[in-house]
Length: 274
Length: 363
Image (cartoon, rainbow over all chains, first blue to last red; front, side, top):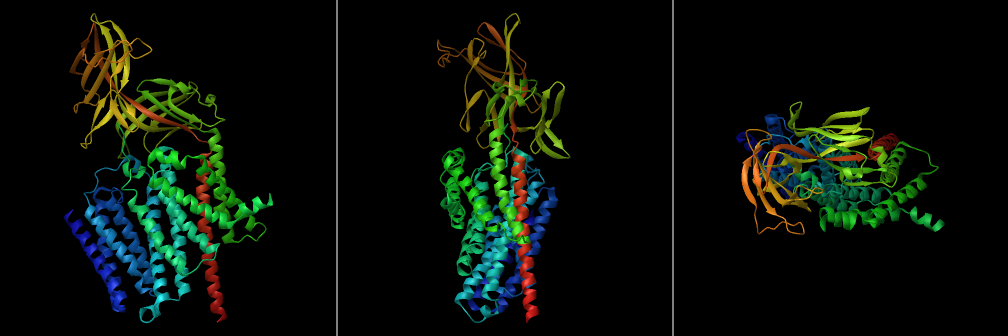
């Protein structure tokens, strides 16, 4: 636990450094700070992976059972998507301005809740469906968070010019990229809901119970469904959808981490009555 | 008629319905909790009417627009996605007409007639479901505690036999594993202790015996439970006295028993008991106590002119029996919808790539 905690806090610290580099980079418009932000995120990602690997190898229990583990895995997916996207495009340097603060806050929250690895896995969680369910949820959240980050860049570029803003792709390209990440998030959230239905059906014999977590997932999915219809059917583009993507992300955070661990739901318990 | 079809085919109506359903879902999970949310929103006729209207709107709006057009990869994906809503709806309607859901409670060794509605604690069924579909009997052979599958602790498993003598199926039920027989699925739900109480005279002649299911009451936040005779009031269990012998026999006393498991043996432990006489109306006279004490399982205690023996401890289990012929359609539709989303996205990526390539070639 000692090594694990140390690695955890190193990851949190590096994500913190990345966060402040991005924020000050945006304030001072210095490219170097964005580079520091990006490489701090990369440096933080390594101990982050090590923490999850250590916990997983200690008992063999899937690393997303407690709220702390769920947050940690979710942030890992966020940073992974962010790094892959950043190193593959290299044109959207300030993207971390929204992504890394969210990753840092969620990781810091996880650090305050960290506990010893569970000794046993609740029988309801011993299902193959849970893997696809969790991958869909975490990757979906990472996608829509990046879409929201792109929305923020769109709004900044729309209002400001010079320096780093001039190096960003055109407004329509940013808008299009944001849309693609939303579409990916919509599919991944769809995967989460479908596999969640199959999982619930395997455990309880019902695929849908109007449980608060299920409803919030549906709400999140509908929010992005409305986004896609506004764009495809009604022709919305640009600033309005950028604001929409940013606001929708907060609904996501509530849906993903606010509800399952604060309200009595199918997800919070998995208790077996005697 | 034309006006109605125009309204139903409107994309604005689709958007309005999505927003209204979204708002209803949000209020359903923020203003109310649990069953209350169902009563106020999710199980209401008006909310389900909105869902039905959305499906009709999706069918009219989307298929009205796409009808007669050339099918591309993108539109094919969108057809699948929107079609999945319609098939899902048809699956739900079909299921609602023929479904059966019942809650069955059995003590180890007990057999109940599957097709008798009286066998179920609660049951509900669709308009066209016939109990004749439920053939034969259901028997709980044994409950296994600490059951493991490939090293995974399943905690408990119910060994159950269902069906008729010439078409019987026996198997184990545990979380993530159901027993299926002739279209009916059997799921585990809850379990508890069941105490065999025998009433005898002082000469040892047995007069009556019955299994008394005990309820579990959490002891604070210790993670431990108290197992006691009682009943459930909404979501909580209340300890109380039960008539003994139980009706239809003539009750002689009001008896409360509590079981404390022994760490030394799975079904061993001590029983705490207390009995009151009954008044003329059959209610316990709580001001007068006939007997109280604590004994080990198998030991007798005197009660008036008789002797009561808590002879053995068995387990009772609560199982959920389901027959849902429309579920396969609904679950299949989910995959179709997901496939539709993926195909549309691939189609859009390919189109954009081709457009970019064409632009580059033009330059």
